[in-house]
Image (cartoon, rainbow, N blue to C red; front, side, top):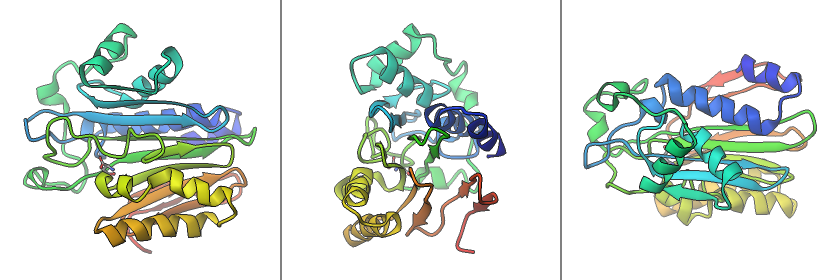
Length: 260
Ligand code: ASP
């Protein structure tokens, strides 16, 4: 986190910082994304990620991609090197190979259990995600999200994470990254429903609360991290807990898992 803070302090863009933060979390294997992902019902890992630049509304995503070390980097590659927003499955992998993104060399031994997850639990419907939102010195925001999805998901299942507008959103006012049961987040309107409310004058916290209430009403659970161009930071969830951290130039580092 300090790493991200110092990058922002030295003028790195929000887009570069969210990509960097998510890539680090994908590689470490501690969270359900990248290396910490669990296999689908067919026994192999499929990964989803997306990234969005609030200053340009450029966005990129990969869905159900196999065995790349950093799906978020491939998502940015899609954003910058194609006219598309999302590539999925074999096409996403072919793109990653063509653009020389790092591949997992030995998939059988690469993936590991994320922190707090037992071998038994990866057969159950648990889930996890990593996300980052940032506000840079020029007042621009960006968001990125990456996940291995729900454990034991059906082959080809895609949740909210790679869907720009559902799991990830950034515009000229706010950057948002969602976690939780993707099917419910999609049905509740996800990140863009929060952004639209903020645009029409609702406070960030109230807008997030409203989306989370919809998720809950439908029977799901979720969490949201967000930052506005004014520097308001929100990390709100209605799940049992959400690993989260925030830094800003004016506030000390906050790291938490459950309600304090
Ligand atoms: N939203 C992710 C998905 O449904 C999982 C999570 O955030 O925990 O794939």
